[in-house]
Length: 396
Ligand code: NAD
Image (cartoon, rainbow, N blue to C red; front, side, top):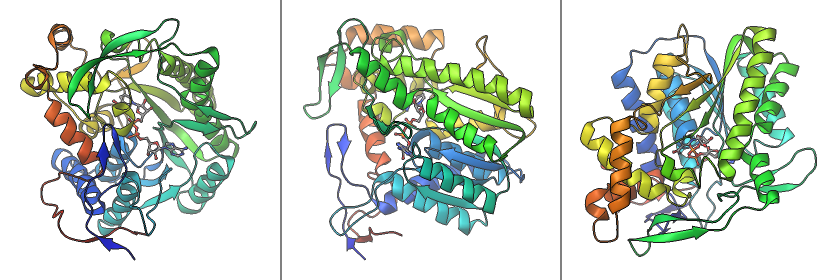
């Protein structure tokens, strides 16, 4: 038991605590969003979500659970609370999701541990066998800074760096609240390889093989993983950088898996290209918070903006789900980034990017919205949460 008043501990893009009631409110808001927009179609969909406790993975799980009554096992790697520290936001999110599913008579089970390890894969397999039989959908939404390779024991750290030459671009310094230039030195060959090892396709292949070996993927099942393309101004640090190389590897893996799975089971593997949204992973990428702030300002004004839950509502109501046929681009990818990359939006972002500086960024971008969105991720600054009230932080 640890009952306390929890106030945010934030420095720049790091928040070292989380509010359990605020995180529960976030999950509830996401559920309400889905319930308000979709008529629940109860199905016998069984889903395994890897990276299920925040961002796109959490949103995927909520959409599938409350849209289709899907049974889910969610794998994530989050720190529980102890007597000194709150748990991580992802821990509270997953805890709340499980409780709220139970309340609504739905099945959602959490598995907290390192998804890269053989042990957690085995545990997930045991639970799928016990609780579900087979799965119809694997959602792979991991974003991790490191991976201990289960075969070699080597530790790989992923980095967000350009390749070939250094990159200087604008970014917002959250501590000083100014727009500054940041220069990032190019990655070494080793760093490129390490980033591919963490964020590329090998671990997804291991998950799929582990499920296939145990005959746990049902006929015509779906595997989906997420990637990002984005505006050209982010390319030096994203698409053409180390993370872009890892995503190329993921895409190759998805296409190889698709060939294999369709021959074997009539199943399919897809890559969904999603919009840039405020998550812990995206906030850590230099340049991206300023880009998202400008993008959201423009898309809000147009009424076309989407966050993770609205993107996933669209993915699972229009493309992937029982009786749906996905609309794919020429490279077999789902394009949930269509609104972000609409030519009007792209040219307005380009224009503002050229003008933005410390004096005008509050007018040219939704920086306040970005800050609020970032705090919301940790359960702070949500309406209807009483932040002066003590809360139990050690939830088990
Ligand atoms: P996030 O940081 O919000 O969530 C990452 C998830 O991975 C969490 O559930 C975390 O617990 C889990 N995780 C991390 N390491 C783990 C491990 N070792 N074992 C088990 N779980 C682990 O991330 P996100 O931004 O939602 O990103 C998810 C995916 O979506 C990534 O592939 C990312 O590239 C992609 N994507 C993100 C954006 C964006 O703007 N955020 C845009 C397009 C695509």
